[in-house]
Image (cartoon, rainbow over all chains, first blue to last red; front, side):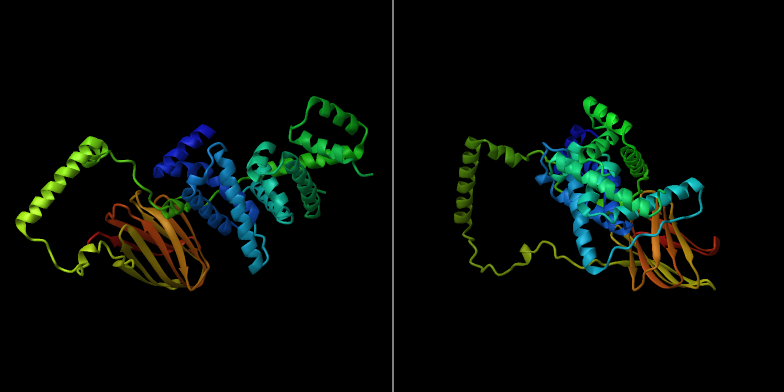
Length: 180
Length: 254
């Protein structure tokens, strides 16, 4: 969805149009949920964070700066909420890896699920600063400039974090046996 | 021998397609002469492909409904101004109308001689609405007494909300399927009481519950905006076999 489309929808949301909000929800529900899931490694937590994010968006449309892209605003809220959630979870108990649902299915599906679970396990071992850039780059498809805008960091720092994160992930995935 | 940071950065930039022609030429010259650099390039490219290839998780199908339902209704669209607003928007008319109203009020009070001296202690007229706890109305219930599963399922309603209460004991894993033919009804939430071990999934016209063995109490919330009469068909299955079927009826006013 283009920036103009988002801006029009937001204007309608501010004037109380629930259909416009539902359209924004339909557009961003999946990436927000996926970002939260990759940050938290728990589907229930990702669902709760997604709900909180959209409620916050709805309550704070007045604070949205239309000169910025909507996705950078909502992704930033998502990552902040996820980090807050992690803080709460860490005080209670260590993060547990979710078991892969290896239901009956073609071998390819199983292999895809295995890769996904291994990548997720590796993601959870790296620092949240690094995890956020990997999620934005590889799971949400953001460019360096966009990541820089979302995280309010210089582009150079974004690149540096991404490169370090990749190096750590590569080592971790080798240890986890994804590669020989 | 460690690879110089400059070339590690160029390798990453190349993988992301964020590299200039001059940088690309410099990187290729380096890689042609450095096996370690080529290995790192290949590994990072494979990592990038693996990350990009991870399939997205599908959000729970009922999440959108829950979010929409948790969003408070906002002010309605702007209404067109009423007669008095139009009248008072024009300064000259505003003063004229105010003056005329003042004269009229004074004359009325003098002529009727009915200025009230009653103390302002009757506040009943000021009370608009008093918030009350949500009240539910029982609609229908069914009892199960099978080898695999026993207990009750009841249906209540609170305005447009229909609540299915499950209070069951099962000897084994049971799948419960609740079907409602009215497509305007949608799944609105799920809650477990005193126990866990039940999962839920929803699609248009159907809610599926998977409950583990043991005593389970849980509730399924459905939105029936039109508060229309409807039937919820329940199927209880164990190992794919239907062990019990029941229907719960709801009709407004009952």
